[in-house]
Image (cartoon, rainbow, N blue to C red; front, side):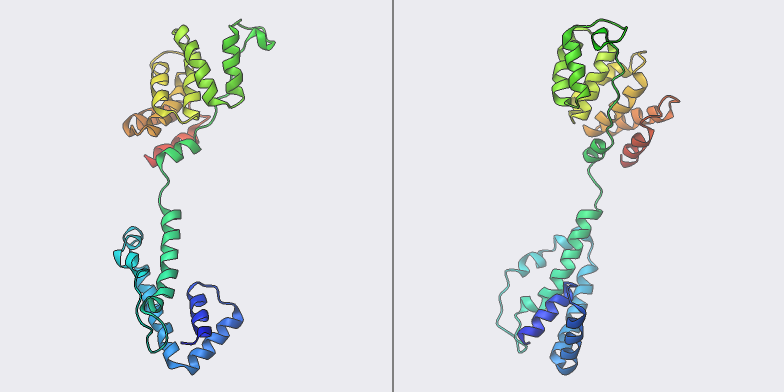
Length: 249
């Protein structure tokens, strides 16, 4: 096969032929029975390759060793690898693209995408409102939370929660910070007492605990808490996100 024909054949199976090149390849194939036979052969190879399942096809040991094959040129001046290469390369590329884009995302990525911030509803006198007075460390922790610095906020909240074991509201924002920072196992430990309490944050805590359980791999816990949040009349704000995660479990 002449170099020009090889180039056009490779472009054909890469779906990169221009309109002019397509006409040229057709003309060359009409004048060269060997080239016409080669095109037909590689079309059959491509069809065969694409019939494999995605995972099995990509892991096919024959494909892995194909790149190592080196054979003398045939009568039409292509090696055995080249003979199969155009069609197989194009088909494998399609399979890999499909495998990457069609496989389901990990549950951790789904959790991260559907973990939304709970608004800071705390009111402190030091923030200029007529409400409770709190220690400056609490103000600092909520400032970090409001600034979306969840890793630092979680660290700041931890000693506050330890010193104020009766404050489920502090514990709730600590747990939310952990979930938003993708510290799921720690989030489960932080939020479980809130869900088990009569605190007003109990219902939204169900959502965040469900996310934390899902992210840490405890599907039963995730299903239980997300469903409880969805079923609650108060579970409205994050119901769409909760349903998305629940569907993926």
